[in-house]
Image 1 (cartoon, rainbow over the protein chains, first blue to last red):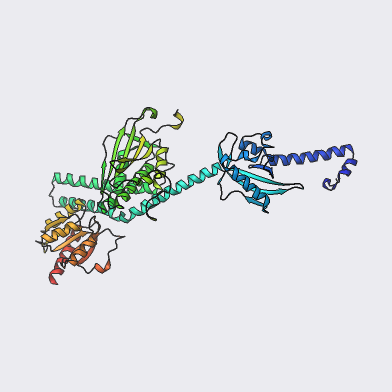
Image 2 (image 1 turned 120 degrees about the vertical axis):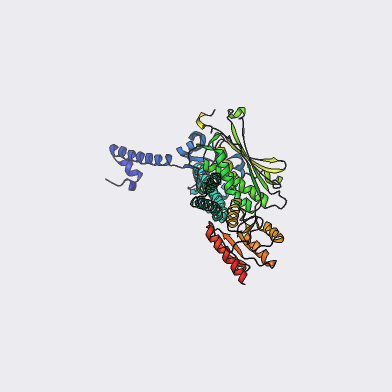
Length: 409
Length: 127
C-alpha cells in the first residue's frame, strides 16, 4: 500500500473512487483520534490570538470554566480571569507575545494564579504557555490545570507539619525536667514502701499509719502516670483517632500536671478550678490535650516573659447550656487566664493566624493558636480570645456530644 | 549511732519527701530542720547551727546549686549531700569543693542516706 503522506493532492484526485474514499476515512480517523486526545486531556487547553481572542478550546476547558465551546470561541480570554487581574493580564500577554520566549510557566510562583469560572467562582490554576506562529500571526497556547485539590492537600500537610513542630517544641521543653518529674514520685513511693516493709518486719503495725502511707503511694503513682500519659499525648498524632467519650476532668488534670513542674520551677502559680461532676465529652482526647498544653505553654510564656506580669495562671472549667442556634447542646467551657499584661491591641486581630508570633526568634513558632482553633472547630467547638479584667483569656468551648455532621441542618 | 544529736537541714520542694526524710533522720536521733527551697534554707541557716545539709538539686526560687554557692560565699562549712535525678544532671564541677560531700541519686534507700550522712559528719569532724 502506498504511503499516503507522500501523496500529493493531485495523486488522490486521480485515484479511483474506492481508493479516494479509503483515504478520506483514514484522514477522518486520525483527526478523530487527535480530537479525542485533545478533548480528553486532563488539562484545559486554549489557544488565543494576539488580541486575546480564544480560537481553540478543548472539552476540559468547557468543564473547568463552565462555558460551552460556542461561548468560549470568539470571546476574549479576559472572560476566564478574575476582574481584578484583567488589566495586568493584558499587559503581560502583550509582553509575552513580543518577547522571544518559546514556552514557560505563567505566574511568579507555583499556584499563585487565579482563574474565574462562569458562575463567578475563582480557583487556583497552574498555566503553561507556549507561542505558536502561523504564516499570518502569533498565537498563544495555554495549558491550564486546576490545582485547588493539590493546594488544599498542601495546606493540610502544612498544618500537620506545624502541629508536629509544636508538639516537638513542647516535648523538648518538658524533657529537661522529665527525669526529675518521674524520679520524685518514684522516690516518694520507694521510701513509703520501704517504711511499710520496715514496719511489718518490726511487727509494729499501725493500721492508721498503713492506710495513710498506702494512700500516699497510690496518689503519687497516679501523678507519675498522669505525667507519662501527658507526654505520650504530646508525642502522638491524634488527627485520625476516632471521636470517643472522654473525661474532661482527667484531660484537664493531666495537662495541668504535665505543665506543673515547668510552672513551679519559675515560681508561677498554676491553679485549676475543676468541678467534680463534669460530663463526658465526645472528642479526640490526644488533640484536646494538645490544645490545653499549648494554651498553658502560651500562658507560661506570657507571664514569664514580662516583668510586669502577676505570676499566676488559672484554668477554669464549667458547663454552659447550649444556645438556640447550637441545638441547645450543652457545652463545656475551659478558660485559661494568665496574669500577664494582656495582648497589645495591634496584635489582637492576627493572634489566631498561623505563624503569627510576638515571641523572639527561636522562642516558639507561633503556630499553636491557629492549629488549636482548627482542632476545636473540627470538634464542633470554638477557641476564642477574650479579655478578663485586662488579662488574657483563651476560651475553649466544646459540645458535650459532638454534632454529627450528616445530621446537621 | 553517730547521728545522735546531729542537726540536719533537709531542703526539698516536695512535701512528701521532706516528710519521709525527716522521719528517717528523726528515728536515727537527728534534730531535723526543713526548708522548701534554697532561699528558705538560708533563712534557717541564719537562725540555726546546722551540722549537715541534705538538699534537692532542682527547686523553684533557689535551686541546690545556688544554695551550695551561697553557703560557700558565707564562708560556712557544712557538709552537703545533694539529691539528684540521675541522668541529665549537670553539676558545675568547680563548685564541687564548696562543701559538697556527695551526690545521691533518687530514689534513695534509708540506709544509704544514713550511712552517707554519718560519713560526711565524721569527715567534717576530722578535718
